[in-house]
Image (cartoon, rainbow, N blue to C red; front, side, top):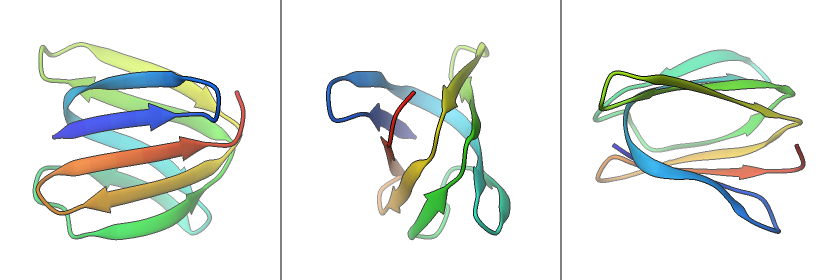
Length: 81
């Protein structure tokens, strides 16, 4: 899956991943390959990213929006860090 995480000022992350775990206003969500399209609000919590190489990365955010697009593409728009 392709993931892009952006603020107004810069790109925080772009790359191929196998899983994204994020906290939404209605609970935690795990995004895997072929997830249904979705737009949801994110709350202040770390985004947990599992990269294709097997490494894990965490990015702390203060909230934002998550959009899961067709063709395994994920866009996260972050309010602030």
